[in-house]
Length: 264
Image 1 (cartoon, rainbow, N blue to C red):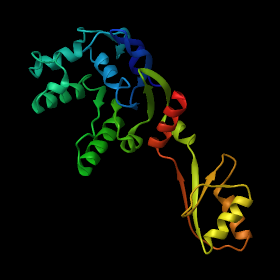
Image 2 (image 1 turned 120 degrees about the horizontal axis):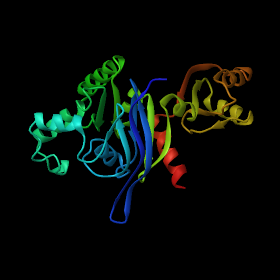
Image 3 (image 1 turned 30 degrees about the vertical axis):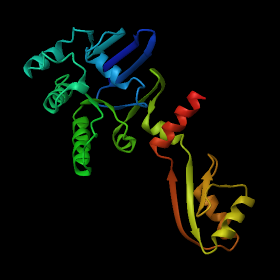
Image 4 (image 1 turned 90 degrees about the vertical axis):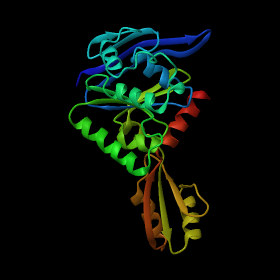
């Protein structure tokens, strides 16, 4: 297994009596794209600032085996100086001008020369062409061994990129998994069009299937069900199947379901 380029151990942060990060631990493995996912206020940006040494936290952060801490971040300090950001680096980013934000983005991108690249909402404000160009660039850099930690609320785009996922809620990690593993646990459906959809629904319900939509014949596939089984039930009752579409729930709905389950 490849070595971890970034290691975060037992990260805790509070503002007054309000905990923002609670025992956050995860790794980013060399040459992998890691998605950091959570609702607004979950703690994603705080984690990234801690990794960059921009705020003090309890816990341990290592990049390429070198310990990083608040105001002791050799790699970042060099970039900050080169880009003349020293005078404002400790200001809140929301007060930055456009040029200052662009410089901050460059500093993040070249954080580890660049074995490790950290991107906070990189798709924000990009048009479809710009989004595709950035996605292609990230995937190309991954192929040469660059590791990425990416936070994004545009989960449809993150689904196309991330190998691994760190899901955070209210400052606490609730799931560390791979994209493949998470999506294999999602609900699967098959939508069919027949010559008599009303009859098709009745036949499938009678056979024990869960039909989940009213306007089309959309069937929930339990783990032990196959698309071929659904089609066999229909054809054995003399129904002609004109179209079939197999689909799985997307990353957004899967994460929302996970967050709802965790909060319940």
